[in-house]
Image (cartoon, rainbow, N blue to C red; front, side):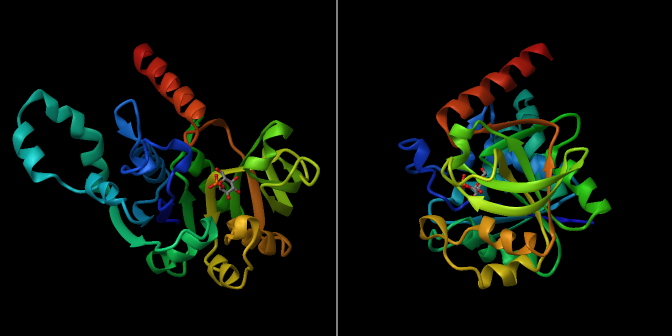
Length: 274
Ligand code: G1P
């Protein structure tokens, strides 16, 4: 059973400036729910009710969101507006939240290592909230948990992207095992088209074994002078410990304006049709 899910949420969200100057990018709403709430809902629907969030300066709104606002509760108590708090109240009731701060921005690998204190020595999920995933029919993380239950290993979510976009992602070289499952042989963080081993790109969903922390500690700084989770996972891939899952569903890159608009349109259409 994997009960913990880590949310690296310390990044500046520079692709969304000026909106993210004073507001965490994770709090940008798709319709009326902040991005990170979609992620926490996915974690909970996948059996993970210990939510561990790596925050940074200017991210206090995230903690406030997953807490009770007594004044607000008092104001709308007994009114029709109470309904609007149903989804967040449900999460607060069912999940526990813990936080730690990443003091310097040194990459996703560094953020995950910062979260070790909240995770300890057990397998855990990782969700990058700005990759908003809609699993069909089940949540993407839940599809990954099912694979983990059959084959305990590090598991990464992947999708095919156009070659012109490989430079935005971690890209894998892998052997197709069938049913959307791949055994990863090699991984490269944000390669040029020439250096990319293919077009299978890593999406912001991971299941990691706790040994990743020791590997991260001994991994050298990589692309952009940052500690890359892709490099640490590559060490484990060479030991045959990394699987990739081409998930069923859609994913929106909500860290970019166009992905954010696509997600908004998708969820608005869904709402209208319900
Ligand atoms: C991170 C990872 C990258 C992965 C991507 C998915 O990059 O480093 O390997 O493909 O998330 O969204 P970032 O988008 O944080 O630069």
